[in-house]
Amino acid sequence: MSMEIHAFSDRQLASIEVWQQPIAAAGFDLRLTAERPFEALQGFLPAQAGGRATGFECYHDDARELMAAYTGVDFARPWKHALSSRRGAQLAECLAAYMAAAAYAEATDGVLFDPEEGQIMSAQKAVETVREMERYLLAIEAERARSHDQSNEPPS
Image 1 (cartoon, helix red, strand yellow):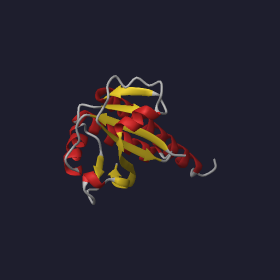
Image 2 (spheres, helix red, strand yellow; image 1 turned 90 degrees about the vertical axis):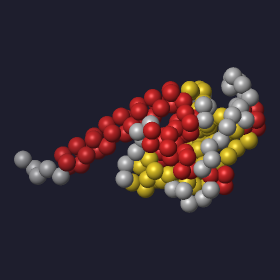
Image 3 (tube, helix red, strand yellow; image 1 turned 30 degrees about the vertical axis):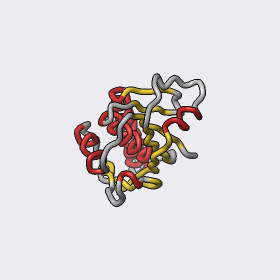
Image 4 (cartoon, rainbow, N blue to C red; image 1 turned 180 degrees about the vertical axis):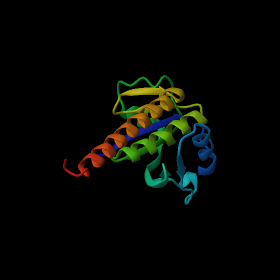
């Protein structure tokens, strides 16, 4: 199952290196791979998050076509650009894509649209959503570690 998020903006960033700056400024533990030029992004974008290899698909989509596809959604204005992320259901991929998209929206004075939630978020709200996702992921990892530790305890 593929999930999407879209960052809408009126301007684009110049490079992945420039994109990395707002990611770092937000305090996100995410490092994008700059193997391809930003304008050539069309497919899987490798990344490192929390010291682990991850990534997500990243595309430059036609903003007008994309907004037209989501009938009933009020985008408030006709945005010029859309940077879309597509990823699987793995939590690490989801978190990496959200971190990157939230930082992109922040850096371009844009917004984030999550079709799964059916809502448009300000860049600030998108960053808050990432923080909630991080807490959720940490709680899941802690629970998995506890379960693993308990299953390895010798019988009493």
